[in-house]
Image 1 (cartoon, helix red, strand yellow):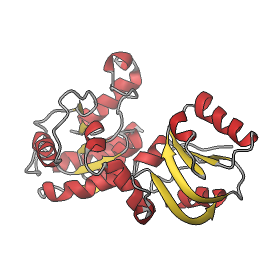
Image 2 (spheres, one colour):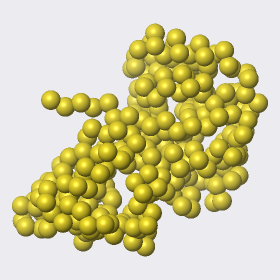
Image 3 (cartoon, rainbow, N blue to C red):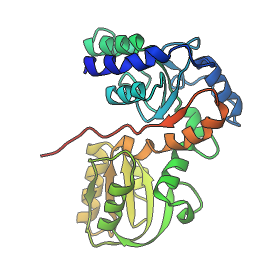
Image 4 (cartoon, rainbow, N blue to C red):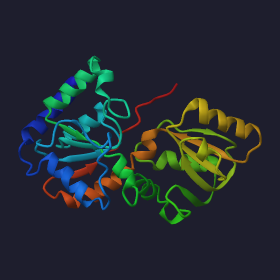
Length: 275
């Protein structure tokens, strides 16, 4: 893993200094153009690796900064990553939790050697009008015409629970392998909602698409609901499968603000496999 990343890093090192914009200038333009007051109290939307003085050669937006994504960014000639979710495995990227872990040190050293800067946007991405994450989801799935008064529920062309699950499987750009379904595969579906907890699971829709849900909570409720005769289906997807595509919408928004360097969205792929 180290060899592949560092070898690819030669490209970033070779290009270092060619950019005419710093990470701090990129962040300043984002803050000034969001159209909403910046949340100065956020602990999420901050630098995770590097600092504002870093010259930028290219920008990658994505769900999370894992090793696979870092390699892809370096190969693309980009040394600034803007993720939506954590880099160091906790909601607040709490370094104290992992500072003595060899994997933390390895990841930080690898990024530093490749002149990378990581700056996260989460709270302000959701606060933007429209919410970047839901905008990307609706555009990516081509569900904009089907919205039911908000960005999180839809009146869909008639399908089945199985058909909806398969549509998500083939359409989501992150290439998820983690879709799990509870309910009758032949259940007719015309309405759907997305959520992550019991509040969304109890809503009156034909299908509930669940992201980053607690298994002891949501899985058990949905199993009991189906067994009790509730005519509803539940589709469980990974966290990145839901929110990753939103960072494509963010990349499209960001491009005209930083013409000095290329901006691209790279999905954070689902690395799971099953037996």
